Image (tube, rainbow, N blue to C red; front, side):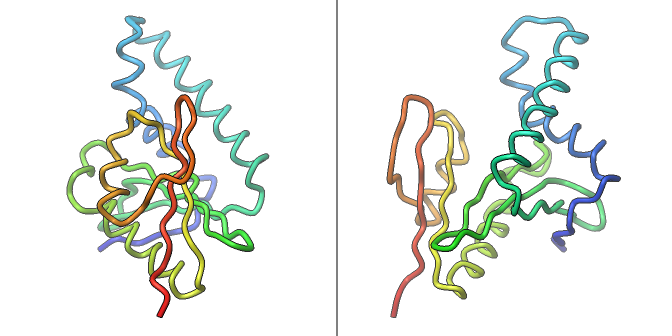
Length: 156
């Protein structure tokens, strides 16, 4: 059973592992040794963490747990006119099993309950784009690297 818990300091070691797991395939293409890869990923994790805290001080940081074990994270911001999905990350072993779909459906229900759209930013190359599109997200803006996608609740 999927459970979302507020991130606590004890989650940091898992979050570092998760970050490295998410970025591993990309960073392996650089041709670096293990030490360089680990140092780079640690630096990038710290930078992302600081950037999120600065850009989204009001964000909700939640750890995704399955059977009590941490398997991912979700970061959201409740803004006046939308819910921003800042980050949704799952361990590689937990991807393509419907977990991301379940998490997004929960978020869509939450957004529908308060009558707000969901907005996210995704790299053009991110395979999660297919999931977002399947769940009704549509591109509203595009840049050289990212697309801004939105989902709107059905109004009755």
